Length: 364
Image (cartoon, rainbow, N blue to C red; front, side, top):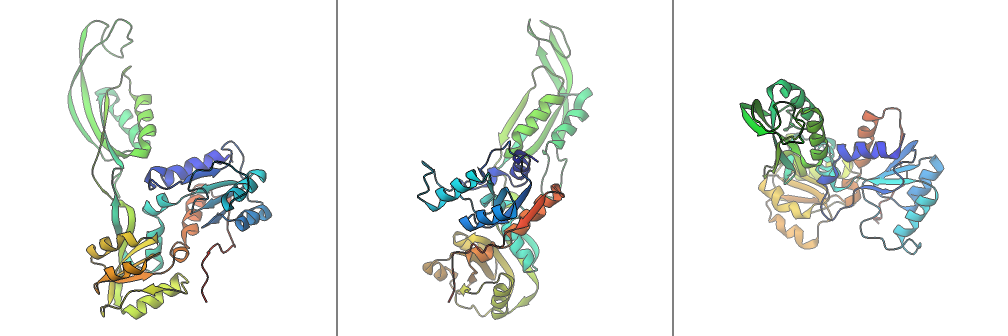
């Protein structure tokens, strides 16, 4: 299939609009019109990973960490990134990355951590903001069901575990068609009143184009009236980090051993033990020290993340157990998320897990 097909699917399943401003998720290298036959999944893109892709006949590498973070002014093979890009282009290997947007989705990195620890009642730690829009439009009664169904099919009207969410109210719309108009109802130059239904629904901002296209394609009017309002509402299903609970509380020592075992973390760092059992756990895959205060506010007994600095451990204040499991270790199951996502939609597409250990950190 074409590279553009799988990129389009991933861009929508893991919306690019969910990524942080500093990030660079999406297609990194490759011609969207090229054909791809198999993909290699990895946390990082290294020279060894690209060589592995070549040897296994994979012409697409899908990673969690983007290869390109900063602007590239030249590709002369002088840097790690330049050499990988040059090799990928030469060997016609495409590179796609899903980073902080994969952290934010409801099946993302932190939730996967929680599932691996067998936590229950999993919820988002810091909900995503400024991602919702409200659509208001006015539809003649004769076409209401058709237009509404088209808008919902395009992805609007989803709230948490509910879909087809909307509000409708009847009213009377008025308009006068100009001399060069071709009105669906009424006559040019004459004021016309039409029984219409005001329809309201919400949508994620990344669906804006598809939803408006669906609206215009099914609405009978030559000029379609609609409004889009940005919303301040938080989406409790999507965001950074998560919180979950054990069915039965465990001691802090037992918890630390479990984290080490589940994530194969050989260098777990942690704050002073609080002396309390661990029941509620907050998690954030990757660098999540900035969420320590959020973890404490959630009432969590422990917070598992990575890249915690020396002074961050003082923030625990003997009120929460801060656990640094390692950056690579906390994100090691990311490839499983990507695999399940791709196979679900492209069951016959060949997807392989990279056998290259890209963790740059070693332990004595």
